[in-house]
Length: 148
Image (cartoon, rainbow, N blue to C red; front, side, top):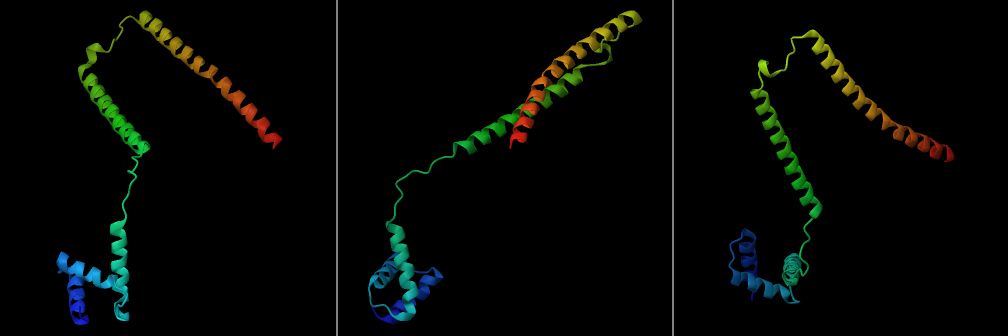
């Protein structure tokens, strides 16, 4: 094929106006060894595209299960928050002043208040007892740091 036709085909190829048959002719021309110096860049380009066409991937891409787990965990957290807001707002609408459990007798109110504060105190003491483990952890940490 003469050089003028190849250059015209290359101009059409650069504009994206060539047919598959014309592109095949260009690939065949540039697969030969005798290519003019000013067209060597096209030879490299067509050689690269031919090499890429021959390559196939045999291994299937692995799906990252950590990303999927993170996505599903995020979705679950959003649903839990949405349901919590829905049920909280629903329960607050059902309460009115008559349902608040007001006590008119002062002695009974004092007794209930003491029981409630005693219960809160017990829960606080249980939480405080767990802090002993944290203190032991800090002591061990300090011993290790002093050794270094």
